[in-house]
Image 1 (cartoon, protein in one colour):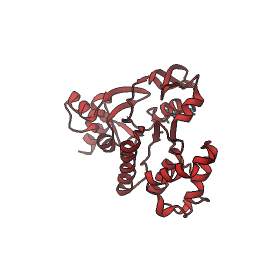
Image 2: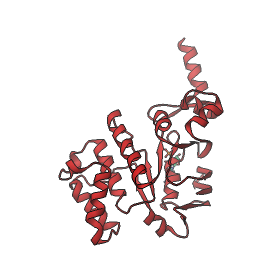
Image 3: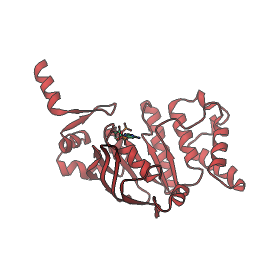
Length: 259
Ligand SMILES: Nc1ncnc2c1ncn2[C@@H]1O[C@H](COP(=O)(O)OP(=O)(O)OP(=O)(O)O)[C@@H](O)[C@H]1O
């Protein structure tokens, strides 16, 4: 799918020689700390950013030469809020159906399918600004489903949500995959979530993929019992719950001083 992608911002190489093969119908995770290059990789795969070098095919189309076909085949939920708080859920969905070019004759059916997939029925007439974080995420995912995407890209879909809301978002994502066969590419810095919910993972650090496999392959390859330990083994660093990284050695130094 992606072949030797490189993205630079001035002197910084944000994505450094990233190659990936993602299978149809799998939930694939990009796992790494803040600044690892996950969002930048998604922006290339969703045609929002041109790589300095390398190429990628999404749903069989080239992101560089056939961006319109890629866009017609994908859904993308960015990290930043994309729903309009001043509109109801139903109005948001109608708006997105229009701007993403869903044919008029199909709008009602497509909206109904997205509402069902994300279980939004009871809140259709409520203003989005009154939604909890988890409800908003499900509304945003619903808007990304209106073009019936083959591939759905979710950038940190559960960030800031409480555990119950997180579970509900994941439950809906798995149901979508089971019912529509949608391929889901998701970024996260949450190890536990990646381990439980992704079929395969690429661990990213400083723009590079440092390891890739199913969660159990990664654990057994490194002889570890948690992905946290795998991350520490391959990078020498740890990820905090907020996604920040810290150096294991400097943590140990602090621990020694405290001890
Ligand atoms: N438009 C930009 N201009 C300059 N630097 C950028 C830009 N976008 C990202 N970067 C830098 O590229 C690196 C990778 O950022 P990216 O957002 O892809 O990381 P990430 O793994 O998605 O982390 P996060 O979870 O914080 O979004 C970071 O150092 C970031 O500061």
